Amino acid sequence: MPIYDTAIIGAGINGCSCAYFLSQAQQNVILIDQDGIAAGGSGAAGAFISPKFTKGGRLKELLEEAYLFSLDFYCRHFPEHIQKAKLLQIANSDENAVRLNAFKETTTLSFSEESSEVNPILTPYAKASASLVLEEGGVVDAQAMCEALAEGIPFSKKKVASLHYVDGVWQIGDIRAKRIVLATGSYDLVAEMPYLQLRRVWGHRIDIKTTTKVPYSIHHHLSISPSSDEGTLAIGATHNLHYNPFGDEPYDLESGREELLEKALKSVKLENVEVLKDYVGLRSGSNDYLPIVGQIVDADKTMDGNFDSAALKKMSDKSFTCFPELYMINGTGGYGFVLAPYLAKQLSAYITDKTALDPELIPSRFFRRWAKKQG
Ligand SMILES: Cc1cc2nc3c(=O)[nH]c(=O)nc-3n(C[C@H](O)[C@H](O)[C@H](O)COP(=O)(O)OP(=O)(O)OC[C@H]3O[C@@H](n4cnc5c(N)ncnc54)[C@H](O)[C@@H]3O)c2cc1C
Image (cartoon, rainbow, N blue to C red; front, top):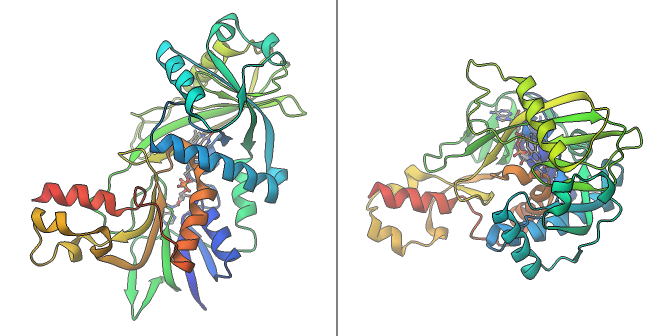
């Protein structure tokens, strides 16, 4: 067995994007997943590529940059796995209309109010709500895109229970690698990170067949994709904060479908609907809603010795002790397909060229907040 430059644990959109960029940078990479490519949340995603239609803040800025980058990246390198279309964003409440109007004032993206092509299929309620049209949106074929990104990269199907660093090399059973990237989504964190709690949000989406032709991506109470040539389209997704797929209770597909169709019908007069396929999965978000990308702090080693809150204040993030060559990419919430290529490119550049990462996104921000509370 060779010693790989990087072993990536988790073959969702985050892991597959990292594998793509690291192998483009001539790294010898292996992908490891307990189930398969896009077997987690990524396989469930509607994979709509859109910015965040809100007034401001770091997440909005980040998503705007990532939307532009990733749309261009997918279209340039994998055009067969993305369906491009105009994107109609409709406000779903008064509060949401205020945010949409603020977006119009602050965005760098060009948009119009023109939606005549799609108007005939909209409900009166949707037509009466505040809206805008982006010239460019996209819907990715989630499974095919992850597979395409991972093409040619060695894959090992195994569940990783723990990590061992021996003589400067990470060992995962018989696999050895100089570094590890954890891209494990909403599953248990394989490394010791007492300072990091992930928010897990269950989601359900469906593919349907309908005689109604939808020309745009429509985002309102949920997202509706444009129709394919065969008259199928994707509707998604629900946001269920309470359902835990790791518990004993089975998920009620019927009520999920009802919720999806009821919300879709608030926007579009869909006719002769037949549900073709259900997709379910978990999104994984951080407590500050920003993604998490970078080297992982070793809390025990950093807190060893004379550690107190006064010392913490004086410490820069750079002086925290990190696990050797252990990185992560996670917390992309409901925007994994928007963020993953953009963030994976940055993580790859950080690993290979030590190009700085955005300090607002690195895992140590959670260590600092947690350590402060430890006193
Ligand atoms: C219903 C739904 C709809 C969505 N819609 C959109 C959308 O329209 N647009 C958008 O951009 N995003 C969307 N998302 C969000 C997006 O899917 C996620 O942000 C993205 O999938 C996160 O990718 P990931 O690679 O971090 O995690 P995952 O895709 O969950 O991948 C993690 C992988 O790690 C593996 N793994 C975990 N632990 C281990 C271990 N110990 N050993 C081995 N393997 C392990 C798992 O098997 C899994 O395959 C949606 C999500 C859901 C659930």
